[in-house]
Length: 52
Image: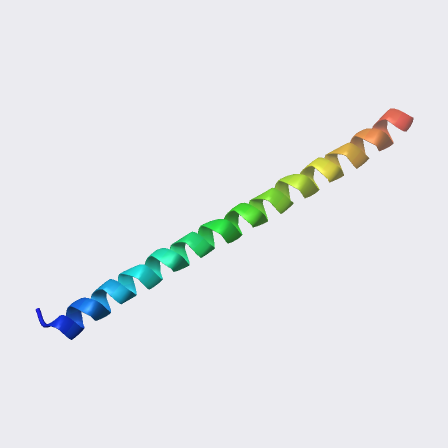
């Protein structure tokens, strides 16, 4: 394997690792928002039923 091919492969691998980490961060952030919204909606519904 020539040196430029090897350096390109290592560079592409590093880029892929960085992109995977970025996706994981985004997924965690989205999941946190979804869980938070579900809790808020559940509390609102619970408050409505308890007022009756």
